Amino acid sequence: MSFVDDRAVITGVGQSQIGRRIGRTGIDLALEAAERAVAHAGLSFDDIDGVASYPGPVNAEGGFVGATTHDVRDAFGLKTRWHVSGVETSGQAGTLLDAAAAVATGRATHVLCFRSVWEATAQASGRAAALTDKSTRAGGHSEFRLPFGAASPANWIGVYAQRYMHEFGLTREQVGKLVINARRNAGLNPDAIYRDPMTMDDYLGARLVSWPLGLYDCDVPCDGATAIIVSRKEAAAGLANTPLHIEAAGSALYQRHTWDQRTDLTTMAAHDVAAEMWATTSLSPKDVDFATLYDGFSYLCTQWIEALGFCEHGKVGQFLDNDDYYRLEGELPINPHGGQLSAGRLHGYGFLHEACVQLWGEAGDRQIPKDVEIAAVGIGGGPEAGCMLLRREA
Image (cartoon, rainbow, N blue to C red; front, top):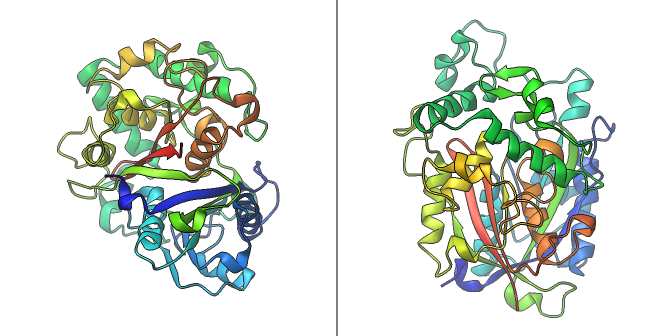
């Protein structure tokens, strides 16, 4: 049985202009993406009776939150029956899964889901978000990090990567093949931030950020917004696009919400959500035609490859060695758009957008050169993760 008994489908997507320091506000970008998504679905704003966004009005100073649910509701004058936003959910995918549940249970008919960022412009204008206030005390998780200078997520993910490398022999050269593949794909994406070819020497020679993560292991801050329309299946008949079904989904968290105290530091919440997802479907990893996997840091993408069952635990290095396998023309293309490492940090929703346009055959020069029906989408890192299988209706 599929997620929400097959009663919720994706009917349209849209993206705003995407770029570095383009000088537009996050609200402006969110509205542009929303207009494009609604039009793409063949709907009008009078049809939209639900709105969902991630992460809600938190940490807004540095452009991390471009617009809130209420910003978009008010701008379009929407009369909604249901709305939600929040950060304590299953990664950036959480609110979209909430939207699917809402339409499946009759709380809404068409839900506009969106994510908007304007980090590049905000940071260039001196509005970079501070991780702490100006006091000399740190609380919560920060008290175990900030006194030791570990203020950046790169520090936290770097420790995870070190542990995996120590246990299983993963090398930077193997990870580099994944990063180079992302850049190769981005070269075919006119909206990608970085499109110039990358060599292994370029990758290994870039400055270190937090061992073993170098510059090209980190995603690219940008300005942009993505919107997805989730509709009740019965209401999707006659719309512009073939419905995309959420065949299965995972949102589990089996351990504490922690970036550094998981029992097995060679795994993440990705493993929890993937296990839940596969337990709810008759499909298997062999049925997946391509994957869009979160790469806020390159190591996070390697975790998704393993968690989703595309290789055995501890064997991701051997998987990465065969880069022909996950090229655009390969058996399992990964991140055809270039991922966040090259296309830009749209913070999760870009992977959903890419999965949809590939399934609809609308990806242009980067369209996977085989018929694709099933996509695996994995979003998030550390203790925050969600995943789903998308299936194009026959």
